[in-house]
Length: 117
Image (cartoon, rainbow, N blue to C red; front, side, top):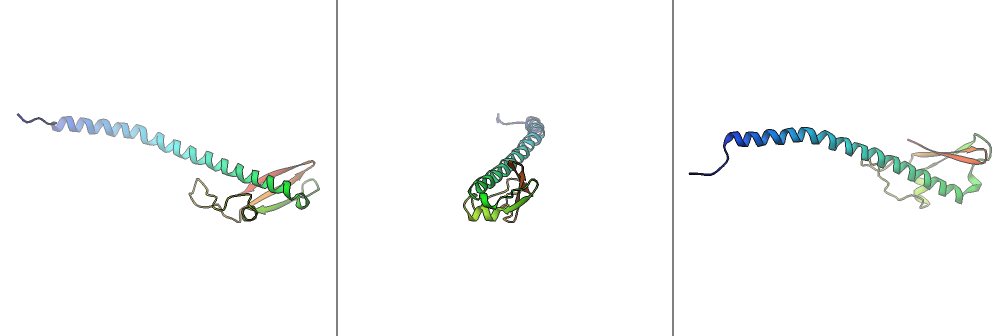
């Protein structure tokens, strides 16, 4: 007598695996997308922090009047070693555009930093 699986048993296993895949794949995709969004937000925060560090070292270039602003680029922050050279966008997998600007606005005694993407 030969031992092996019957066609019905194999079909049963395939159906169970298909149902599991239908349940698992959408959840995994959702977690991957959420991770990319969170990573992107962390990269933007890192860029803002680099701009703040640049501002501390370049106080003479900052605006003095309420509402006035300046912009600096990612390229400038990279040239002056405030950011790493190959800064990748987690959502696209490509490098951030080096012409992307960071707007530094005077708010009385403080400053607001905004990445313009």
